[in-house]
Length: 634
Image (cartoon, rainbow, N blue to C red; front, top):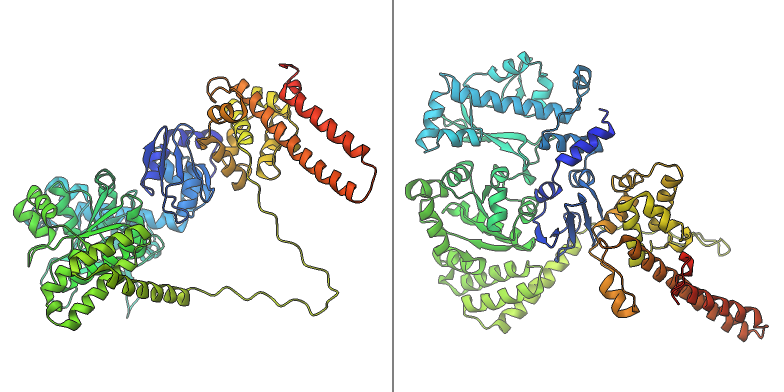
């Protein structure tokens, strides 16, 4: 698919980068920018910045940065055209497409199309056919309104072997694509396929941006030979360990309340939403995974576990506690009255009563684990009591933040009635064993190759030097040139040599800008769009979102009054050039001092060295007087 520059710019202009990034990162506004924990590397303090004014993101930790296209490519692991297509669909920007391009649609797009068709097919079967009436009555019996059915795209799979198959083939969807989407199954004893879902209420499973990924199906009949629920298999687009049911509908409420409620089933999520409790998701057809918890951590810090009040629910809660703590989340749990689940409770008592119950009975994980042990009789023997203490301490040991871990150690001491000094030694032992086990499981790096036996062999190449970080003054000059284009490029590079910029990406950006200027084709935004590679794009994004402002620091330390960046760009550039040139001369003076000392040690004539030193000091004075600008303020 070919996209013109105009179409790429149209998609970018129609896209809110804060909204896109916010689907993956919990952002908080600070000044003109938004900040959050970087999704590309592990960190405890937010260093990931989103600049809505320039439509850029940048992480000051791992130094990844760029525009909204780069973010989608990095976070989803897709190419440029896939990212552009996703953003266009999200923003409602039509893309050029013809019959030939549809034929060349890749496998992933074909699967998405098949899944979307199936979701529409199931919804129509539920809401517009005679066969779907029993399923619709079942949903109404559970209290689901017409609006809720539509909101969650609920459906019905007809009790027939190939109704979906024939409907899809009539729309020219290949049977091979249906199989890859998990919608049909090959017959064992004959040619052909049959529908996976038959005679079931259908719950579409959506991605966090609303794409259909798969389905869950609940049987309507009392057939004991059939499982109550069946779910889509793993496919190219559906990875069960990463998807959460209800996240698409609940993500805004999760952000708003800064907490997510994790429940067990599809109907729990839907009933709570209908009752006004929207910050809720379910693992959906699988045990909770670390990937799912990581996804939730992008939206909030607190997780509230609310599983069924049975043995399986208690086990799932303990697993949720472990995974949540390992990811650095604050974990709480609620035990519902015996025999109740969130769906039944909210249908019987309503959303307000549910909220009140949760508020009254929520417990931190230490109190919950202790109460659960008491309910099951684990505290009735000394051995059971010691086992409960170890279980709680094993959970505490999973907390990555040392201060939070210490706080929960004191909380465990309070709940268990055991001095914290006594518990600390056990906690430290558990921590050491846990770290030893992690090291044992970690993949070993390959052994380095042995050196050649010959002693006379030349040494191998030295490691590549680390990329030098540009100075603050360089970042300001680069930003001014990117922001103001040709006039500022002419002003700055008319008074600065390329070699005065730090070798590496900063100097390469200068070369690119100079080439644009010489070719009379100045489009600095291309640096931000990745036209010259990821390294250049990251630096360009960094200088645009860098909160560094020159005035206060320069005035206090160097007695230079500099306007803010947006007050007088030319004066800001002149001051930055003066300081940068002075830094380079000071570096040359230090090198000359070393050379003078070495010459003195060797007993050489020092006049030439002294003359060079004097020339450097004269140059420094000229720079301070701004002689390089053709002015003299001395």
